[in-house]
Amino acid sequence: MNKKPTRLTEKKWFYPVIYLLFVIISVLPLYTERAYAYENTQDVIINLLMAAITPYKTWGIVFHIVTLFIVMLIALRPEKSGRIFSA
Image 1 (cartoon, rainbow, N blue to C red):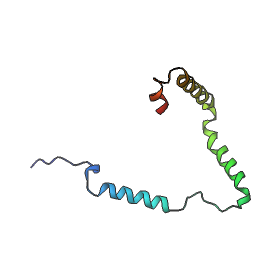
Image 2 (cartoon, rainbow, N blue to C red):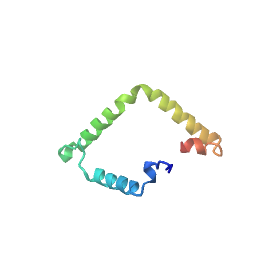
Image 3 (spheres, helix red, strand yellow):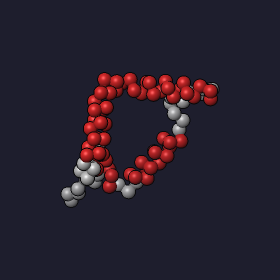
């Protein structure tokens, strides 16, 4: 009577429950949702982007160098750059 334990992902109900959770999450209003006047949309977008970029400011130069490296690799060796570009 030595039963092998089953993994959670092997249960019959696991994926329907995950799907239901994703549906519920997508229907719920955002925690950060606030009403604002439509004429302030540009200001809201600018402020959101400024707040989202702040943690990565120190990594900006690295992102730029990697982007330039990928563009050069695609231009010089397109047959070998597919996997890197996909990543």
